[in-house]
Image (tube, rainbow over the protein chains, first blue to last red):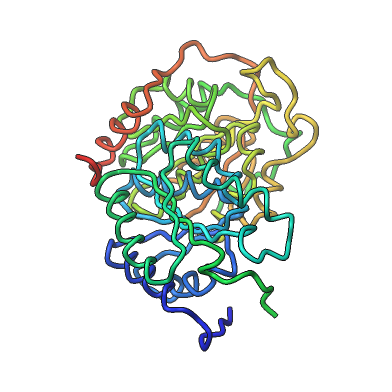
Length: 177
Length: 208
């Protein structure tokens, strides 16, 4: 994976540092361009086990297995994957296990692909109707404190929280050449 | 690798066996506090009927999740053997998870697929395996090279012995008759989860 680090923002490193500070070991993901830097960092961190999923709902079950096994995990996806998780979130709500999801938003700010718009627009409701609290981040300086607050709610409080990184924060999608 | 390779079988060639009998045979071999993740439906009910092990987790909610739950647990606890029991209908809904397991290749994971070719609990409608799909071929195609059909009960026991003793991941597929479970599990999810966590020696670090 090659990432253009010259133009990379600082916030992926802040997310990574927060996940390290909370001793997060399993980093499950279905990739998105907005998560590319963070995913690469997870691959480069010996204490983190990156797990490439075939579909997002696998990650809900995987992180439940991690939690009951005594290990902390995080799930990375883009907003188009959130709908895939809806039924599986019953597991999190019913078994009362912690869940941290970090979602890069599509379909909301300068989106060139109209197919992304419906699921992007429905993402907060999809989480909330299944008992997952959402916290939205629009500005780079809010990423670190928001993630820290979410991680504390999840790993200390046992909550299910999705941090939504807005498309304005990430930058409208351009396909990696 | 011997038990898995010495009697190569196809789905059509293997003996049709009893789920409860096979589950009891498997559970009888678990002497090292191996964790068992039971998949939704009749697989769970016969696991329940095979003894109330503290290290059993009964996934009663969504189809296809026993394998990824078992994978997360196997990564979290690499010294513990972890077994996922799934039905054919359930695993068919999450076939990608077989590729995920193959890519992480946890040494301590065994998947047992209980294949009766039907959605038995909803009235016996045929699944794709009943119409020609072969789970072992799919698993091998997904990268799980240590996958095989059990020819009969004795072969199943040999395979289970090998899978519990040697580095995995493993997948054993068995053909089942249409016998229905006699009893059902309790259903309270938090109770199931906390009982299981006590059974495998973990405590919630959250909200406690």
